[in-house]
Length: 81
Image (tube, rainbow, N blue to C red; front, side):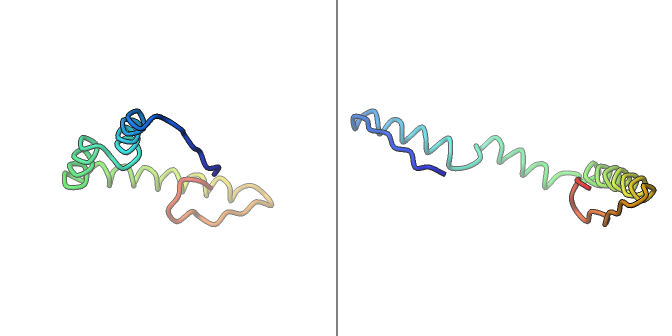
């Protein structure tokens, strides 16, 4: 990645640095609270989604195995084949 520079008067630089640090330094408090609630809350949907993704993966693997000359090792943890 190319280096980028900005030449500004000091008062403007300080304001820019404050904004930049808030934009780039991490998830906002609302996103953090939402993530914590999702991780600590009921996991029923996670299991349901995992089962649906596994079913779709198995369908793709099965259909690809029916194509002459094409092989596929079943994906272990990704959505692409």
